[in-house]
Length: 122
Image (cartoon, rainbow, N blue to C red; front, side):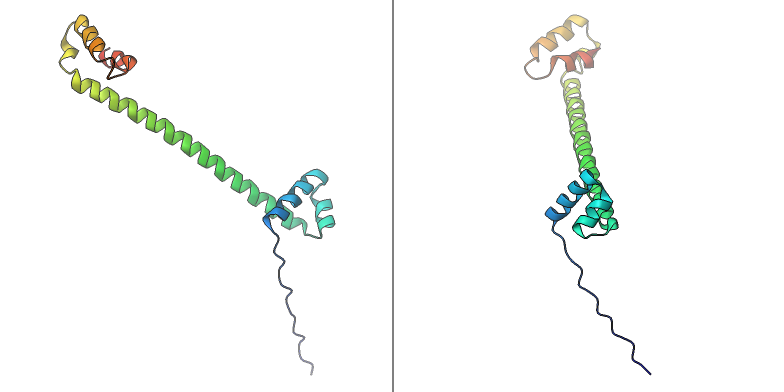
């Protein structure tokens, strides 16, 4: 009776992020199979690294889209706040003649945006 041979696992080789970037650049230039042969890697490693890199890029794109959306919503909120302040200051003017609205706009032009006041009083 023979004992089963103990198999020792080779420690996994850790590649630096710089090495991975260079390997992906090489794979883009000469192809995945050729780059894998040249660097003594598996093709699947290069494919995995590429997909991880694309996921990271897409997440940064999502972050940029979200920050643009947040900025747009902040501008919109500021416009609504200004319109509300105009309405609170000029609530009696809404029922008055147009000349009174013009007087209000002229009087408060330093305080509020003129376009916003015109939009509110339409």
